[in-house]
Amino acid sequence: MSTGSEDAEPRVDAERLAIVREVEGDGEIWIVREVPAPQFDRRGGTHLVFESAFVMRRLRTFPKDWISMSAASLYQLSLDMRDASEG
Image 1 (cartoon, rainbow, N blue to C red):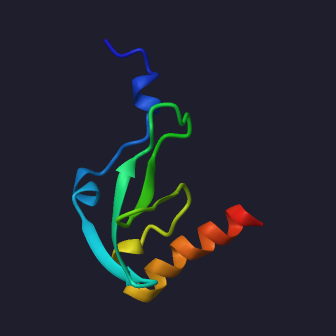
Image 2: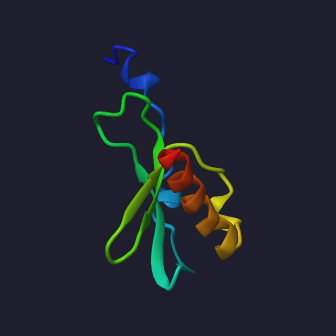
């Protein structure tokens, strides 16, 4: 029997989680993928993660059409996030 609280959990689309893109930026190759939010993040849902050899950036808010964005536009998202956190 469901308590109803499980039904309130955001659904995560497994197909979207399987998509991985590579983009180049600042001389680095970045792996971009959507991942489930960490358990401690009560907002749930998914995050967009950018990983290079030495850096990881995580976006909580991102366009749902990130999969079809150009590589340059996608990389720019990570820069915008970085710049916002420094301001």
